[in-house]
Length: 227
Image 1 (spheres, rainbow, N blue to C red):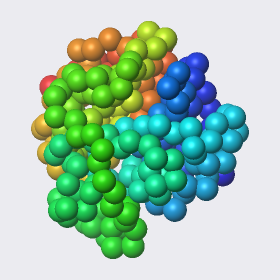
Image 2 (cartoon, helix red, strand yellow):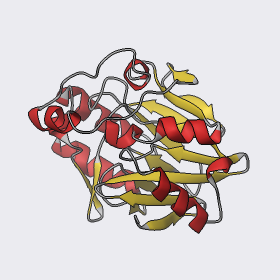
Image 3 (spheres, rainbow, N blue to C red):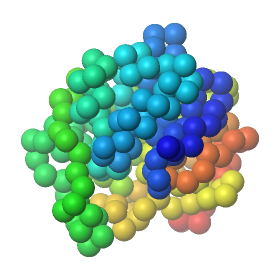
C-alpha cells in the first residue's frame, strides 16, 4: 500500500512506488490529478477509503500528460466513477489510443513493451493556456516533457502547484524531471521558467517530495541554473 499524506487542507499525496498521484477534496466531489501506474486501482480505492472518500465520489480526473505512469488507471477509474477526464489537446490522442506516443528514450521504449495504460475517452480537451478546467484550478501548458504536458495551479492556501513532470522534488528543493523521458529539453527548461513567474506557496510533483513554504522561490532557484 502506498503512503498517503495530507499536503495542505484537503489535498492528499498518494505514493505508488516511484510516482505520485494527488487527491483534492472539493465542495463538488473528489478530483484526482493523475492516476499512477497501471493495475493500481485497488490501492487508490483503499487510499480514498482511508480519507473517508470513495471511488464513486471522484468527479474529475486532471491528467498532466500521457505517460503510462500517470494515466495507468484512468480508464478503469473513469468507468467505475463516471468521472470526467481532462487532458491537453496535444496529448489527448495518445491517451485515447488514436495515435502512438512519441519515442523518447531507450529505457522508456523498453518499459513500454511490458507496461501500458488502457486507452480512454477524453471528456474535455484543454486548449487554452491559463484556462480554468474546474473551479479553483488553472491549467498551465508546460510542454517539453511531452508536447501536451499541463501543470495545474490550485487556488488554495496561498496556491498549490501540481507540477507533474515539469520538475521534481529533491529534499526540499526543486530539480530536474526525468529528462531522458522528455521530448524537448529546451522547451522543458522554458516551461520551468514559466512556472517560476507564477506565485504559489506549495508544489507537488509526479516524482519526488512536495515542497511547502514559498515553493515558487525554489522554482526560481532551479530555473536560474537552466539559463
